[in-house]
Length: 378
Image 1: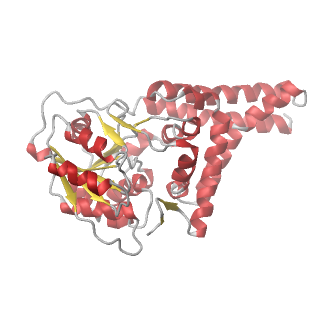
Image 2: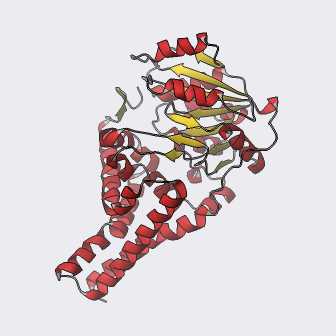
Image 3: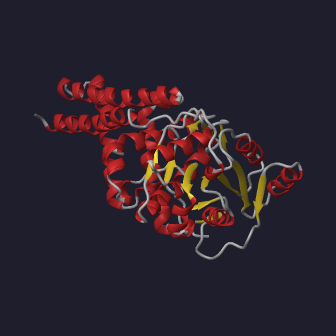
């Protein structure tokens, strides 16, 4: 076997791993059906919405929360020193009689991330059995919260999370945002995650984190990771570290979100915490090899074969790798209603993801990870 054939064979292995893992996980990433009987007062949920300059989102988010059915729900909002019309809109909602409590804004302590401070204030101000931490750009179907509580109770979980249906309004978003599902389902051994309580196996999405209040308090609340920009990873790990159980469910039909608008926001939004989600340069190196070798190099080899400088043997192997990558993306796009543009431009998506992850590391090392005018930890 020639050197080029060895590279092509390695590409096949790197592309097949997420395909096989995705196939296994799709059977385990179960939908949470809306319960047929209403849940009682002992399952009351307080939906905690941190809001910093969310005038475009806050009314629709609160409205979708207050329309929940099947479980008692109250919305809590923390205005994180907004400079737009967010405070004015919140006052109007309260005056209109919405079941909403605005938790008083307090100065941001040194070393805290603004979102984590707001979530911690809301969690400690509430009294419900369950806390649901979400974002202002998330929209909930009427039975979403009841379904999540029922799933948590059925699985005996202290925290459950889901990735909403991520809508994309531009090509830049379509190239990157759907990769959340690719990374989650392509590399997380979900069956092992459910059997093994280690915090390192915890996973979640910061757009939807439903947690038992007592487990949240036991773990230290959001103060346990006060300087983080990645509560989707940090809170599940914190719950597991203090003896709790976490799980994931498919909420595609229950929760929807448009994370970012345009490529610029998408680039900056993912770069602020992509490295934190990986946690170590060795993990970043692993994903770099897996993504470039499995999902970019095969396309280069096929182009080389078409140009006449790559032999048929390596090209056949490259074709297998390309097919595996596309099949993974096609499967995910069909299941989670993702845009097809990202599937067709899969190698470009993987190049962008790799660039974002390395950019995130660079920002981390320089202390320049920032979002909405604040650097990490402030």
